[in-house]
Length: 583
Image (cartoon, rainbow, N blue to C red):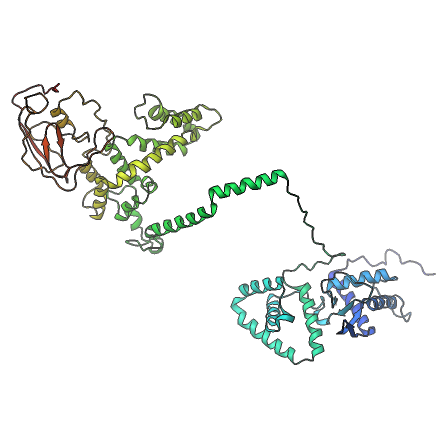
């Protein structure tokens, strides 16, 4: 009786690696190949060459393990291959061989287990065993798929997964697709030289190899095949049906398919519109600083230049957002709004923008200043907002859970919409914008703020208040103070320097009957009217067009503006009357 080896002489336990397992499987397959006789079988009048049934395969596996467990001589050590004493173990081992790719089914190619019956199996070619071909190459798989496409589509057509893999390989390996096509043609030519039975067997062996070893395929082996998860069929409930109906109604109401077309059209138009101002799409003058390292373009478009470029001024005409985004554009717009006595709208909007990006410690102070100056009752620069918007804004300010940083959002949106729809179109038609554009085209012959002063006769930084009470004044004093309520002052001195060139001889005579409604003496005003007149703002809300001819007769003074020059007004008042309104 032999004793067990001592612990000092026992070999340490070494875990088996994957290569060791594959070598043992190779040993079993070689024994099966030596003992099994592969022959041609009939399957529904179809000849299946070099095949073996599942029953015979299980028997040969059992015999191979039995032979390894009983050595022929005592000099040879017993084999370390695991034993299989019953058919169940042999079937289990055959299934593992199938999943590793050593054998494959002939008829049901997607089977995941071996059956001990008349099912036909084929032993894989040793060249395609996992121990020999552990790493699959994308190029080889692309050659295999290309070769399949060159053959009969009915017998060798690609599956859906193989077609997707072919398209991905074509995109990935397009730079070497000529080589892949040439290799596929050479392999197909060599395959045609074989016999028919050999070609059939090799086709099935190659297809079985790429079925389990293709690139991107998980080569994990499980005891049981992965079952597809059954999707639970949910029965629609009443709430689900109501939700579907509401969603379809909303789709019919909003018509998102039309909005998508409109959005794409707007995006295309916007891109075409701004392509001129993109230095990468259209070459700017003098050069693109991102390419030439010349910063002249940035210097010409700085915020503190005296005269902006022509392209910069034209960009103001694209949208009101482009205008208020430019610091010089905001100053020009404020000058125009001063002439319309509505510059508080722009200052209110700019104050809101400053509030949004202020520090947290300054939010309360700035919000209170904005409220007192623009929205509170009796504020000096109260903006024109409706009562509903004002109430909502005050409610947001008084609520504790609402941040004051965004409490003026409704009023800001209302004022900005008012400027974009009312003031901005008039600004584009105003002589101020046209004068700035002409100055930009003149390339610096006149400074921009001098042009604004000449056109509007008002300083950029000075805000005038409108004359509110003229109904008790005489016609003569009203004409001297304001021309049609437009805010263009004309003093009653003997020589008044203005920004008009007027040259006609016209006599203003008192009205018939000698009432006190007009000038008591004749006043000679020399004016020369040009086609471009000064902006005349009609009193109240109406705006009357300015006639190109001068017709000064009581009780109305109609005049036209002109280009910037001087005006001489000679007034001789000899009677010294009080010029009171006739009743």
